[in-house]
Image (tube, rainbow, N blue to C red; front, side):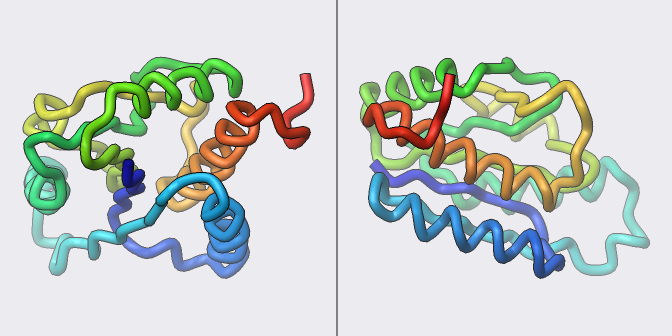
Length: 157
């Protein structure tokens, strides 16, 4: 199964990009994973928050096929421990399917259409983080989850 992290806009911070690259490199040993960047909406200053979310939502949904699973990284989503997230990943892998998409939205969140299409929502914390930082946190947790599933020593309890 292909696992994809869809993100709105570039990270833009070297220290975050370096962290992303480190964990992307580590993940290659476990799963087929890619990160796809959806460009920021052009001339967004002339648009309302709702219009930006709608346009971003259209771009997100263009990437996702009918048989693909779409999970949103959303502050109102379900929270997991790292072990719980590893078990959640295993459940998703067991379901099969072509692709598993996790999505980091833009600064205003997701459109109603994206929420309706989603199969689930995950929150990485009750705290709010920038959408650029969430990418690194998610990729690290995905890596951690894979090491947990393989009983490797990265995660300590």
